[in-house]
Length: 252
Image (cartoon, rainbow, N blue to C red; front, side):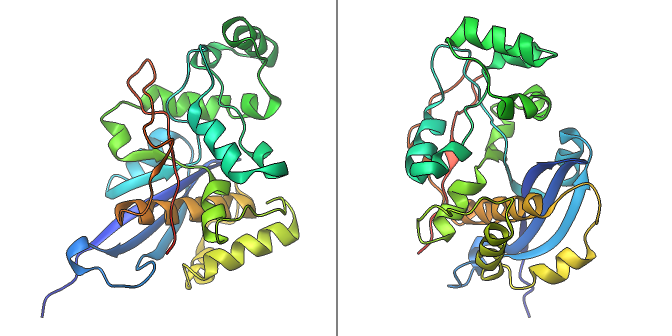
């Protein structure tokens, strides 16, 4: 009797303790079924640095992370951010923060970051983007074009848009109704997820971090199944040779 070979992928979201990592596994291509998503959630863990994330996911074929990968130097905004906002539309478009330009990564405070951003791009940096600066710096320091074959950028609201019949979820993810809606969508994909959540670490993250990591993991599973094109379709390269793109998973 032949044993099915499994492939692992992961979804990653930033959290208070560092990074929350959701690992899922499914059959390799030659053994895949006709199920909408043959992958199952196997683990949820916390990493303190992105370097540790890469170590913990070294056996994963693909790692999808909710953080900008590939940054503008200030000449123009990222096309993928513009495309994601257009896809979500209305008030939900604001959930896609403009990625900071790479020169801002050297700033140690918000005032300096705004000055650099305004000088290079004509726009100040949002508070939300500045709050992500340290984590963006961790990823950018390690990212190379070669590593980007295995580590890809996603945006949770774009992925939830796909799960929600290609409609943006109107409730904010910080609200009880918003979390309940997202939880229900994910439960239809990972039917065993609540059992894994019960066994997961209980400190260093909040529920919306877990939901974002899980939908990132689902996006990774769709990508290895060939169901996740990019925004935009032909992403440009930044000055490091990194593709400026966001994976947009598709459902059937």
